[in-house]
Each structure stands twice: as structure tokens, then as C-alpha cells.
Amino acid sequence: MAHNLNFNEQTGRYSFFSVQQKAWHGLGKVVDNYPTSAEALQFAGLDFSVGKSPNRHLLPSGKEIESGSSFFTYRTDTEEILGSSVGKDYNVVQNIEAFSFFDSIVGGEDGILYETAGALGKGERIFITAKLPDYIKVGSDDLIEQYIFLTTSHDGTGSILAAFTPVRIVCNNTLNAALSNCSNVVKIRHTANAQQRLKEAHKVMGMANKLTPVLEGMFNQWAKIRITDKEVQQLIQLAMCPNKEVLSKLESGNLDETSTIFKNTCAKAFEYAMMSDTQQMDTTKGTLFGAFNAITGYYQNVCKYSDNEAKMNGIIYGGTAQKRTQEAFNLCADFAKNGSEILLLN
Image (cartoon, rainbow, N blue to C red; front, side, top):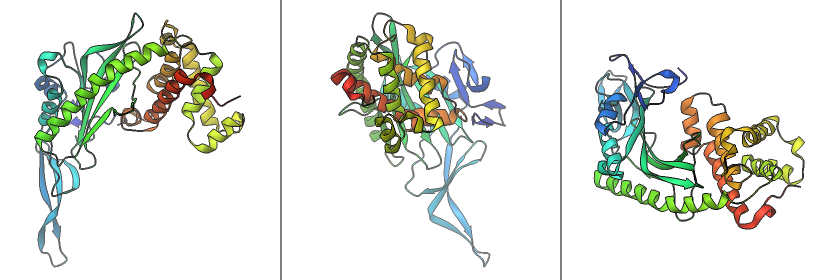
């Protein structure tokens, strides 16, 4: 099952909901209106609780002992094991608590809109995406929606993670850009108490409030900076560069000596930059902002992933897509400041 969405055999439903847009592979529930957190929890099949119990060990003598340091987590509805070995200090964060945490970022009266939520595997990982009420506006008609993405696991493999993620309306390009003195991701260990989680939630909202005017000003500046097709091609090559060895070949003008995979990746991203409908807007065509969106657009709309979880890992959880997008962001910021001299290629 490539999509890895949880299927609950008791209810006969996939654990995913989406507003208006079809869910992965057409599965899950599609609703017309934005739900409350309680409704989203139910629509996404996340209305289950997680238990934690000590592991038991059977000794050669036949005696069974209970561990004081090793525990397992399980769904109380299906009794499926989610995590086979978690520590005694591991604190289960229930799905309803995750949504409450999410609601605390922006009060309901301020217009937070739940767009997607779901569970992967047996339910060991859940995720929530909500749209914030404000936009980043580039030019007169290019709007970038603002999202907060939250995920947590029930198997002991990860922290609670909340990320501020702007997404372009026209093509759903995902941005993961960290600015100086400001991170776009907050991680909270499962040992944290509710008060600490609430404090961290407010930090995420403060981060969004801080990033919005900075990004809006920066993107509008980039939309006014002209860049040639050749410069776009070179910027893409530098942003996609996987290691110092490839960089050395690029600096020497030896693109032909790089791998076929690298050359094809750069070619597809450049084709997207030149041909995509979203790249023909006044804010993107022939602009530095368009060059940046060519790379984010490649990873969101062109790049092939083994499944949607792999796509989410690459874009959100610090995978290749996020790293290359971050490198593109840094290069574009450098280009805006210093011009084409940052492009070392001949």
C-alpha cells in the first residue's frame, strides 16, 4: 500500500480527511467546509487513544517478568502495537491533545482552518495541516497561503513537530526557509508537559508572525530582480548540487562529468522554470522569485517519489527536497545582495 494511509478494519475507513481536494489515491474523506478540531479528529479517523504498558519477558525457566524500563504503546481500539520499545519516561500525547495543542497556536476565533489530517501505518504517526488567516502577497495578484503543519508519533521514534510552511495557491509549492535568528520548525519531546507544549505552540505562532512580513518584503524584492535563463540554469545546478565533488566539477565547467541523475534533475527543474504555467506570471517570469519557485515547484510537482510518505519526508522532515530548497533560498538571497557574481560557473 504505497500511500501508507492507515486503514481501520473495524470501521472500514482510511484515516485521512481533506477539505475539497481529493485525498491521496482518492482515499479518505473529502469535506466541503472547514471542520472544527473535534470534527477533523473524527473525519480523519484519529478519534482513538493510545495506551502504554510495560514489556514482559519470558525467561528460560518459564518465569515471566515485567520490565521496569521497557514499554510498548498500542491503540486501545484495535489493540495494534504502535511502538514495541519506549522508555519509562516516554509520555503518550493523545491525538486529541495534539489538536488542542494545535488550537492553542491560533485561537478558534482567529480563523484557523483545518485542511488535512490523517494517520500513517497502523496509526503510529499522525499529521495535521491548518491554514492561517493571513497571506503573503507578492506583486498584485500572487498570493502565498500560510500553513502550520504538525505531526507526532506514537512509537517513540520522533518528537512533536510543528512547522510554519507557506504554500503557493496556484501550484502548492512548499517552502521551507529558515531565516537568520528564526527557525521554521519547533520540536517538542514527548517528555514535555502540557504547559511546555502550550508555550512552544505560542512560539510557533510568534515565528509565523515574524516570518510573514520578512518573507513578503523579500519575495517582493526578488520579484523585481531580473535574471537571465542562463543564470537560472546555473542557480538550479548549484542548488541541486549534492556534494563537494559535484560542485568541484561544476566550478571547473565539467557538467558532462557529473552523473546522469544529476543532469536530468537539473534539466527537469529548468524545464519547469521555463514552461510551467505558474512561471509565466509577472512575479515569476524572468525574475529571481521565479527562479526560486522553479526549484520548489520541481520538488512539489515534478519530482517522482516512491510514495506520498516519502514525499512528505523529503519536503517536511529535512529530506533532500527541503535541503535543496533551503540551498535555493540561500542562493537567491545571495543573488539579490551580490548579483550574478555568486554564480561561479562559466
